[in-house]
Image (cartoon, rainbow, N blue to C red):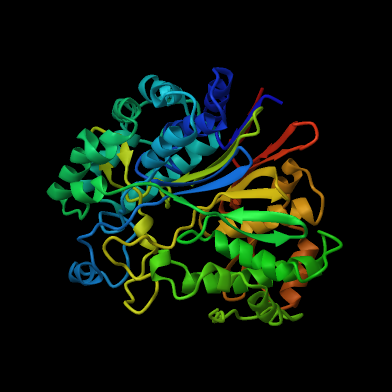
Length: 517
């Protein structure tokens, strides 16, 4: 009843809980957990990544968009002059201004109870003194090491190997890893409330590294950064309001899919008709997302137009008994880590943070432990596309925190991380919770599916085989996947409004943990 922290790594969950026990609130706990995750799960996020948050406090939901913009000096022409016809995955070109430290500072300033230097203390300690690497973390660390060893031969990437594989190999399960540079950076962020990262010594180091190695990011790009408070967007689904962050995030894809699905009646979760309609709605919403979502200043259609009941009905009519080849519609005018926290005062936080692809761009700022994200990889070099690369622009963003309310009452935070799986995971866990009455752990544990492209759908290896066969008979191109991590990793906290009791679930597909008090 006093507090819950749910995330993908036990040490990070415990760090958040300790902050609650020291008098901090759910916002302080979320920041502490997020900072710890940059140390204790660097395969998924880091200081050089982005973040988004939904914060419930004093009866109101607040949204924070802490994604960064492309450097002002970059352009499609410059990228093509460097010999690229598509956005590269690694190096300086996909690096955008990191937003995670700005998110921590802004959340602390507006809603926190404890000083940031107290909140980041455990993260600093784990970076400085080290911690034993957990099983799932070790596996993905090794996978990244193999990939980077094959693909990243240029000297500019040597700092990644120096930082994350100092002994010439990825740390094994139980092996202790530490990073003094990471600790020093976190300490500087804590002591300056994030200022040093954007307008101080760390900003100077990032910009100097860029100048010396052909990067685009400058002191000016960093100095102009500020996390943005935004109004969350929602749809009503069977009496509940499902909330997401507005574009440039892809949360609108989950809402559009649910908006389509609410026009159907579902009586059973384990039903061929249920799976078929879920997949078809997801496909239709996603192709719209690919075409229309970007920095909101550059979008052709508004959130209201995309989420209108009339447009949902138009898309719903396209769902038949056969798998369709999805095409985007035209609305009428007129690798990530996820964590959830809650406290006894009723504060609740849905928080997500990411480098995008694993460790990100492969670039680490020397001596800082900062792995720079490759979020700009989502930009396109097609000048006619809404998400075309442009200096100072935010790209289509995959990371999305979710939140559920009923009337004026908070039910709680939820999220499923994992690239383009995220809105698909949101739809599945919300329907598992609302339509089929599953408790948080069961809602997360249920076998998942993931639309890939066209008619191709991946299902987990434990997905019921007879339903996979039935979906194939209806025209879906079904692939059975052995790798469970591709299906996202989530957490849920629901609050009983009558008793104040907090009920949580965490991800069984990773080293997930729930710390409770």
